[in-house]
Image 1 (cartoon, rainbow, N blue to C red):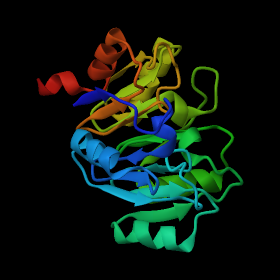
Image 2 (cartoon, rainbow, N blue to C red):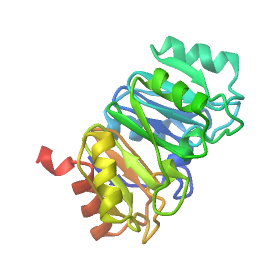
Image 3 (cartoon, rainbow, N blue to C red):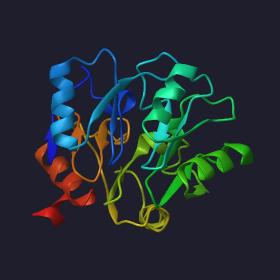
Image 4 (cartoon, rainbow, N blue to C red):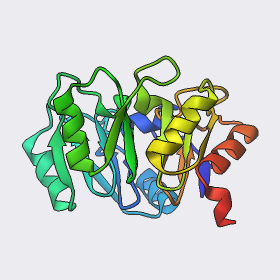
Length: 223
């Protein structure tokens, strides 16, 4: 299922929400009506939480079905909550806090910004149980903001070139394509949330953008 709706009051849905095939983590201040909408579209339970006491859950974490890597400033109660969800939990050992902005991952692999340390890469690999490749994409290091990836497909910034699409396919083990959301926004990771069941994109996304998202994330295969 693919929907364009206003969830957080601005197009940066992926900054506030973390989604996998098993759960969606949403901020405490997201009203119950919108939480229900998210659950219906993503077809998984939504859990209210925070990271480092912040509502910027998508920016401060990267997750798959096995684990979650979070800001080094994560609180003990947050770690306990994620562990109770059955997740392996680790704080990024570097000084960087916006993990979700600089790493994109699914259950098959991950792409991380090249400035992350070897310790950070090892932490991501062991926590998510995937191989991590370090690379800039589209001339930028904000990998997580530029890619929306699931276990069925991925959408990467419309500015990506063919070699970057092919590289992403090799790492993530799924096919994908370039595109934008919200009338030309290239930061598709920051402005959408997605899992294998559904996706929510910025409210003012156009029809052609929606069609590209649907194709790239593999939803057409369900029809």
